[in-house]
Length: 441
Image 1 (cartoon, rainbow, N blue to C red):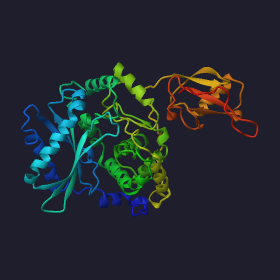
Image 2: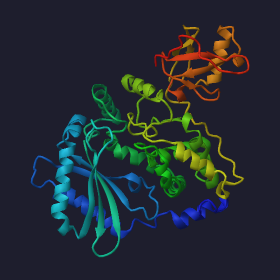
Image 3: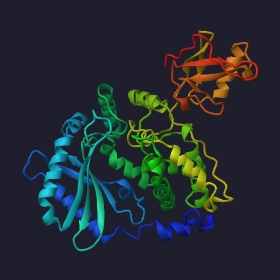
Image 4: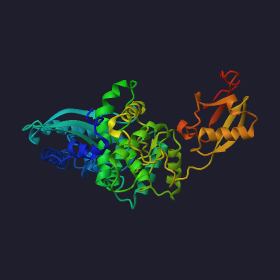
């Protein structure tokens, strides 16, 4: 409970004392160097057709947001044998097997004990595994480093800009079933550059949120339904950046205010629609249209600034994290602190445009034009102006879910040509669904 009991004015001191890495431990640096050298020079020495173009350190340590005593490393290995996203998907499993075999054969000469080597599968069975995980433990000390090795297609090589690679990925996605962010490792260098450009104090705020996540949220993952998981830490990093950009944007700021702001945004996760266009050319027709469709998806939406196919908020269940955020908001660490004024929706850059929805009453549909960010209350205003009905006499549902006035249409996943049902209330407030009101969606 040390964080929760820390006074707001002492959070900077708490970060400096407990979270800032004094410097990447020499043992860890040496381990990363050894594995990189192994991958470049020894792993594929019997397969001359496979060359390591480069190995890039990703994850927290690559972006400069690592938390003290969290010794892990993502190594993205760009291979010459992958000529396309299709090549990566088709041959990745075999490459992972080769790396695993060579690691086991060469472990004695690495001066490290290699433990718990596993090929990490994606839950969707049609998608091949994407990484190899293992722990490297020094034979001289107790120091250990957890590795994830990701063999990857060099999508950016030979392209004049990132948009060419993004359009190639979008074309591949249109022909194949993919998961969100399946090929995000291809854009590791863009992810690193995006986060690294922010000031050290913003990175410290990210460290504080990640520490909170590790200490208070992650231990509660047993509360999740089977087959589900918590949102990734990368989503928390991007949410923190959004909070600072929209609410403060100054090099110097009150850490407690930033901390409280992010916690409150977590509590509003059903409304989140956040994105950046640093690496996206929104004047490119196919890319702009893809982005619009992506941003219209069911919320929360936090779009990876490096990979337009990756909604990093969609892969996890937020309810447990929301519950812990509400608990934290009652603690001394943010007591008496005012949050920054930040909206959960980014309102510039990409215009989502007008969409038509069908409102069904008495078995008949009426077409109404709305914006994805319109609140349910705004839709009710339009319904009442077109039909002789008062707000107290009905309620709206979409896919059997009652719609709350303060939430946006997009937060429910309402899209172009969705059907919303008008359900009457009997006198006394009893709710009934109108005859023939079967929602086709």
